[in-house]
Image (cartoon, rainbow, N blue to C red; front, side, top):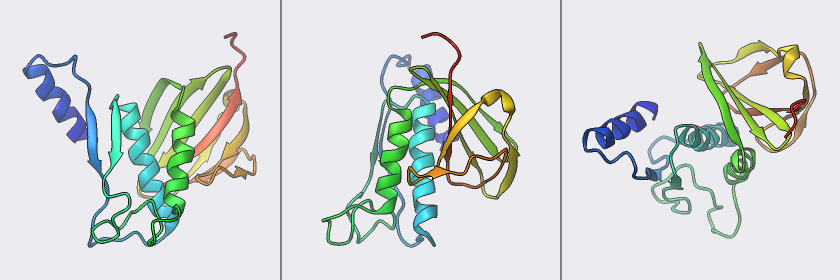
Length: 177
């Protein structure tokens, strides 16, 4: 996904159209591959939203969000009357990003660490690419709360096992607004 976004940006530079917004109108996940669990589906959807936001994509649309004939990552139930856990995870990620300012986002091997600010709070969104990673939370982060993909509070601990599912580590900023 990152290389595709960079290719679009390169093309916009070549044709001197860098002032144009970039929209991702067809992100999704199609047949035949299905996710083995709701958690993995939620992880993919959250990472897609977060990475597009980090890369400065102005709008993202989840293609076939309610089409159960071609999509294996739908955000509605098969009767289209309810939402799936992946849709709820999308809402969680959207809440993390909405109104936030990006300070940095770095890859450390398989570990992604993104630092965002929202009001007087600092948050770190972390996930691992493809495998579990043991990670010691730096004391300087002063983490007060950890949230999972469901919006549930996780046990605060010094070391975490980080998976492909993004986590939000929330701190209170000591900087004045």
